[in-house]
Image (cartoon, rainbow, N blue to C red; front, side, top):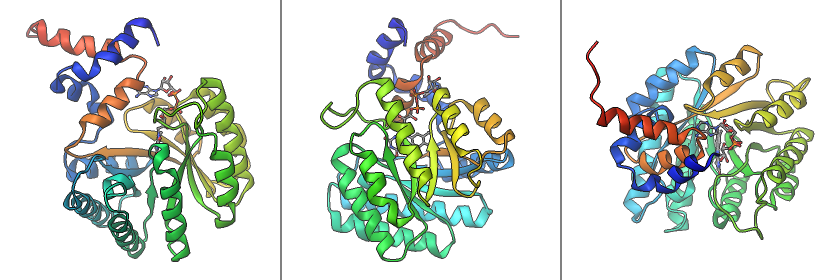
Length: 304
Ligand SMILES: Cc1cc2nc3c(=O)[nH]c(=O)nc-3n(C[C@H](O)[C@H](O)[C@H](O)COP(=O)(O)OP(=O)(O)OC[C@H]3O[C@@H](n4cnc5c(N)ncnc54)[C@H](O)[C@@H]3O)c2cc1C
């Protein structure tokens, strides 16, 4: 990332929310479930699947966790009602993992049972490394209770991930593999760009050598190419490519045109701000976008 872009990333939290909202709008379906339905239907029409994420990570009270669970139940109902090719992705902290683990379990078991009745699927997103053990443990508990329509996420940046792949193998798991977005200490995570890529490929090879399903979640061209080489000859029922809404949409279309199953991560909800900051901080062109937006507000547009 260029120096100017890095500087803008640092000051992003000071950028007015209205500017962040406008610049980040491609990454978010909108504030309401109807927005998400519309965006998912559009993706489906382009041959892409979706996974719906209700935004809202930081919660302080049990009723907030219950509200997130209700929002997800509504999303599941909408997916069934509209016949959408979509599932849901959930963050356990939003369900109260750090507040009351018992409540979190109860809400997630209830949601997964609802998804099961509807014949759809729930992905447990992976958060920072303080939640890895608890997330994998809940995943195992769900599978032990006979819920097969549930998957988990592993982060290539974490040093433990290759052994997590091995330990999960007997479950024939559904794993989304991504680099990992959280800042972690060197004792826990690889820090170098190339080290993380190497780990990603090693974990991908181990997952493909197993018998579960692999969702390959990356926009990194080098990794996409390594993945495409590796899935050649692997049945399309064993893998899918995954990308975030608004990121490298042309590349996503090309993957679909080449016959790869592909799913787009579709976030929606009122709590768009933190998610938007994360996406903007990863966007190599962030400075240009923010500057353009600020300038267009300062310089009045000429009427056509
Ligand atoms: C479907 C999906 C689900 C995910 N789930 C999780 C999860 O549960 N837990 C977790 O920790 N992380 C998750 N992530 C995030 C992931 O860990 C990475 O932080 C993120 O994908 C960036 O890594 P990358 O592999 O795309 O490579 P990068 O090297 O970061 O990006 C590669 C290239 O993609 C383009 N690009 C990337 N981001 C942007 C952007 N915002 N705007 C414009 N261009 C961009 C740029 O050209 C960049 O050079 C998920 C990612 C995806 C795609």
